[in-house]
Each structure stands twice: as C-alpha cells, then as structure tokens.
Length: 509
Image 1 (tube, helix red, strand yellow):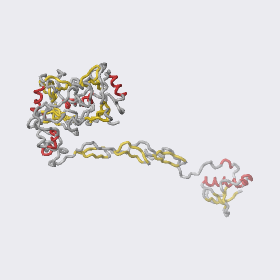
Image 2 (cartoon, one colour):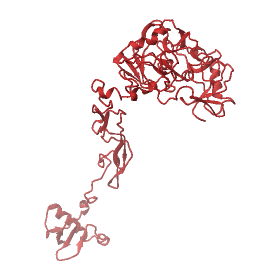
Image 3 (spheres, helix red, strand yellow):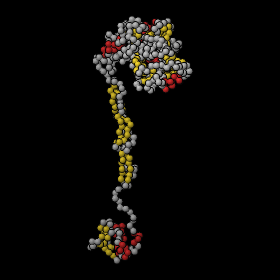
Image 4 (cartoon, rainbow, N blue to C red):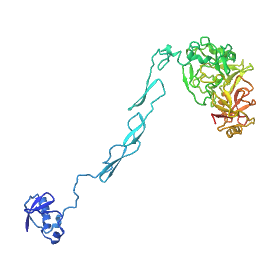
C-alpha cells in the first residue's frame, strides 16, 4: 500500500495532515510487527536519494536491509589535534594535545632571546630572556655601552686639555700643560720642588739631600743615596727594601714603550738597553747621562728593585720582563745595584743567568740596567719600625708584607723535603696554623742590607746560617733556593744538602 508523506529536514518525515514525527530509529514495537514503519524509513531514504519532493508516493520494498543507514558520527566541525598542529613556535612552551584541545605549558629550557646584550638565556613564564651582560672594560677612558644587535662596545673618551689632569686621550705631545706635572709620574723634567704631587715621594724619607751615591749616609734607615743628573732632579734617597710587598711569582704587568718597559706592579720604568763594561763605580753614574724616551731622570736601581725583574722559574735570562736587551754571552756577569756591603769592599748585584743575589768587588766587570720612577706607596717610614714581636713573643710581625715569621729558629738542619715537612707539621714554638717553608722572594724580603752577620732585623735572633726556601731551581729539579741570612745573598743548592728553617705563615691566627 502507498502512504503519502511530507519531507521535513533531513532527519524527520511527517505524514501529511499528521503532527507525529517519524525518526530514523523506529520503536521496538513497530519493528517487531513488521508493518509500514520500516517501509517509511526506506521510503524516506529513497525520496532523498532520488531528489524527490514532499508528497511523492512511495511503494514498500520487501528488501529493506539493502538500504540500511551507514554507521557514521555527525560532523561537529572540530578537526582532531596533534602535537604538530599545536606547535606555537615558542621555545618557552611545551606543546601537547589532549581531548581535542591544544595545551601550552611554560618551561624553563635554554633559549636565545636574539639580544647580544644578554647571556645565559633561559625561559621563564613562557618568555625567553637572559642576564644583562657587564660591558665594563675597566678602562676609565672609554664609555661602555651595549647594542642588542652587536653586543658590548666601548667609545673612547677624550678629556679637555688644560684642566690640570693628564686625562683620557691626552699625551705630553698633545697637552703638555696637563701631562707632565699632575699625571702621577715623576717625569724627566719634574723634580720634587717643581712638582711635589708627582715627585714628592722621592724625598719623603730623606733627612738631608744626599751627596754620596751608593751610600746610606744622608738618607733615612733603609734608603740609599742614588745619583741622578741635575736636570733629572739631582741625587735622591730610594728605598732598598720591598715597598710594594712580596710580588707573586709568574705574574707581570708590563707596558711596552719604544726604549723602555713600565711595570705597573712597582711603578718602575726599565730601560731596554744593557750598558756593558761597567765596574761598580762607573755604574753609579752611567745612567745619569741617558735620555731614553726623552726622560732625564734615569738612575742605577737598588737591589730590591733589580730583584723585581727576576723569574725564578726561568734561566738565561731569569727575567719576567719582556723585551729587554740581554747580551748572549757571559750570563754570569753581575748587574749592579746601587748598594755596597758595609765592609766597603763588595758591591751588591744580581745575576740573570739564574737570578742569584750576590756581590762582587768594586772593580769587577759588570753591567748596568737603568731605571726611573717608582713610589714607596704606603710603606712604613724606613725599615726600623717595620718589624715587631706578636703572639706572646713567638712571632715576628712584618707590617709591610703581613707575613708572620718564626721568632725562635730551630737550629736543627734538614734536607729540603724534611724542611718543608718540619714547617708544615709545626712545633710547640709555632702558634696557630698554616705554617710553611717560605718562598725565596719572601726570604729576600726580610734581608736588611744595612746589617751584616746577620743581614736581618735584630728581632730575628737566628745564628747566621743557610735557610731553605720552597722555591725550586729552574735549571735542575734536584736543586732548590737557599737564602744566606748572614750575608744577604741567595743561591741554589742540592736538595740533599742540609739547611736550617725560618718558617712563615700569612695573616693572623
């Protein structure tokens, strides 16, 4: 039989004249009866498939199973997600897909914020950022800045000439009015009277103008008279002890000039040239005629100044300063210092084949290396007030170096390895911790060249003897350095040789 139906939408068919919806899922009772409801579903599908319109007659077909509706889910307009489709191109999020939704969790991964002014870039709260770089080049004559595209840069600062200070970008040639007096350097045309600010230290410890180069006369204790030319300021008293403290081995801070090099550690400027064929008497004045770099205040160095050039880890030359002239022969010739022994027959010298501190007769053939400048810094006023007893009289305190020395020396003699162990293990006479065998530089720092037999301050009550240092010889690993506290000399010897100890430690308890 035929039934007329009206097509309403895609899911419901309504019998014309009736208000009862007929859906795609017939009721169980209708299916069980096998009546026209099943035919209605088939008819609806056929009408839609054939493009028929409402009111068309539909004839029941017996094989309705061939037109069963496909098993599909309705399209809700949501595409399935994936990690790839959820990628937000942000390295600071961890992208994921769950229940059809993208999730972006902030991470703490390393990243690049494309800013050259930051470093150690890292993600935080979903944003890449870094720590601002310190662009300070520690040069007072540059303005430090940073550009995100290129990084740190430093622009030169040029000070105005005429302000009384030799500032950035100024030289004696470009601004003479600023760059002589007031630059902190006692230049060749300056004297203590014409420029106290630069040259006052030269006479700070002088009792009277000295008249005898190479002599202690006319100078405060620890200072020796040194010759300079009249136009270079005249004779001055210079410290013959380590006013700069004990220098660290292997460290250098030299600036190269045409005829000289300058040591920032001591303020000393050294001539590159070696003056050969000098006995001690001629060496005392030979530097007064030199004009290296246009300076006229060149002089012979003290022994304390000469030893600042020594490199105990090297040989031929045993020198830490670069660019100096060294004659290739007769390495053991002495380089004279401006000091003689108290007995008046031997002058002090340094050999740069190995760095030994020694002496030679006044008439011996030697060499001279000229020096200028220098400062006494904050040194005590002479050697006399430098040492004092501390810690119950068991320790000698050196106010200049802050080293604390063993006051009561153990007169037992030791081979080198045993000497190191002796100081490290300590004894009832050594209060506190950290005792050790001193370096050769530390031992040389307590030498008093105004004393002899022993050549130390009176508080060091040791019997004159050879004292071991911990410094090994550069030429032979089987040798190490001695200091002779009797004469003030220093040299190397076999480690199996027995010597005494003068233990030391740094600072307080």
